[in-house]
Length: 547
Image (cartoon, rainbow, N blue to C red):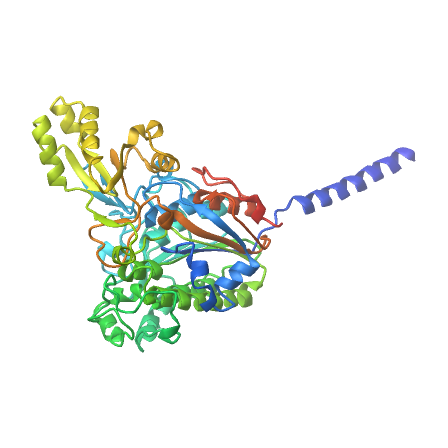
């Protein structure tokens, strides 16, 4: 009798233990993760326009979320494709392989676009250039890949952007879809890498001609123009033009007509962001994202901030208006997620792929250090080296602030490439625009300060990067940026990015501790209880996680 009672007690205890075990080890996750990467968003835009923001967008993120105020990009160069890739892989170009928006392939002597793929066909357009894209050049997994793997591919992952690279690279190798904007049609498209036809929800969105509706009344400031006191005067000489406008001034009344001639113009207006977020909402509905217990992932890039920045510059009223309108668009998007997924049931992170320099004309007018550089002429470099070493075309390409040397030609002519390289570096260091010219293979031991040294090392992909890295003086811009602005440097205006987490699993707060862009993916992995991406070098930001 005692033995039977003991056995019964053990069975009951075992059952209780099993039930308790199942309850405590099942990972809790949000219904949906939303990545918002705002192209060319400098960190200071969070506060520069703060008084003009409303309550539901950036202010909601800052008040309800956890804001990291000292996050930097930890590689060079600071370009779009690398930024999106590094955010989602937790890695750097040396490892994940995306060393620029494009790069020079030493083995073929051809230029390579980061997502270009001649083995796939466009879907939704007949334009081969715009539609033949895939993530095949990406070597590492993304956090979105890892979520798919962790749930045995039950999680849905969708990427949306005006830019092909900013949709494709964040969505990873095996998403449910990646969609980007086609300038030739004004539609969102994909490629046969993902599927052979557009899903009904994308086709329906395209048929609704949202872009036409957004631009039909032109573009004027959302507030009275006198209230844009955070920006320079309208019609500043360092601003570029939009469409048929003869001056960079509001209102842009011809936008609708210009758009019919060039669908790509919407990219440089706030309506490109509106269009993207409306597509994101269509994705939530069409793919039923966040509708069940399995976590889904929606990777969104808002790219009009970048196009407007390049065209008009950070101090323009146009850029400020883009951000004020984006603030309202974000508020509407969050309200939509509250209603469809549930307030507190989704996790959002907001960051940027890079920042942007002040316009050269603005800096010069205000007596701040600036100038123009011209990466150096391929012809001039080759003439210089030919005079010294007797062989022409020793330099193959100059791009991404890097110089590529032709190793085969050096070998064929019995030249020591290290000697040629050092001669060219010594020459470059005499250029008044150059702060450092660095042998990328020897950057780790070069006499240059941190963090520049580490950022060169992290950015050096030995198969895809050049041989010499050029670091220019602060606020010097490439000669092609006579109006507007650009990016790519190590300096804070390009590398200091916003980072805010909000929603499920996140406690409100803020921090001025130093973190890197590559810490975003492992933080998401820790929050979701999944594996880090394969090439990850970052660390979870544990102070963000509240559950």
